Amino acid sequence: MMDHPFTLKISPERGYLELFSNHITRHLSAMRNQFLDKDAYESILKKEDVLVYEVYESKRPEIAGELLHGISIVHPGKVGDEYFMTKGHFHSELETAEVYYCLHGQGMMVMETPEGSWTVEAFNAGDLVYVSPRWAHRSVNTSLIEDLIMLFVYPGNAGHDYRTIERQGFRKMIVDKDSQVAIVDNPHWISPEER
Ligand code: S6P
Ligand code: ZN
Image 1 (cartoon, protein in one colour):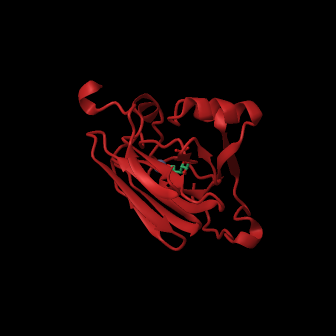
Image 2 (cartoon, helix red, strand yellow):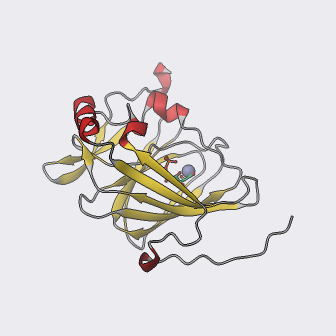
């Protein structure tokens, strides 16, 4: 099958959404055990199952050669001291990269390799973050007021491995420490030696 090229309008006026064909919503209830502060998590959840982030995908075949793309929106907020963030994942096909372009807001990309190397990239609107092959990635909204809106592009055959991060966590967490954004160790992280 040969698809015809196409253009998508991406603009704040259109809510970034026009012609996107799949809408994924992740509420707090879908993020159990991802945030460190369990009491804060339960107490927010008791009041409301808040929408933490959403993704608008332009559906393409999930095969090598295609480029999957869409918009992710991480809403502002915290669970305890920890900023709202995505679940985060490795690509099942580990040797696949991803590009994120920040359209609005500010954030941090938390990344790590299966061997436990880690890095955190801070970015603002207009910045591009390149996630190299092999690096798990999680986007964190470090604003408590504005949405973090990103365009992402990655290979069609990448796939998602959420289970590894659900099990071992990310090594670093992004928290609000005395009204400053801070990178701290995750005390629950399971190191490669412990796995
Ligand atoms: C997919 C890409 C993004 C994320 C989105 C939500 O490879 O990295 O589209 O899916 O940022 O994050 P997550 O971790 O819930 O998939
Ligand atoms: Zn990805």
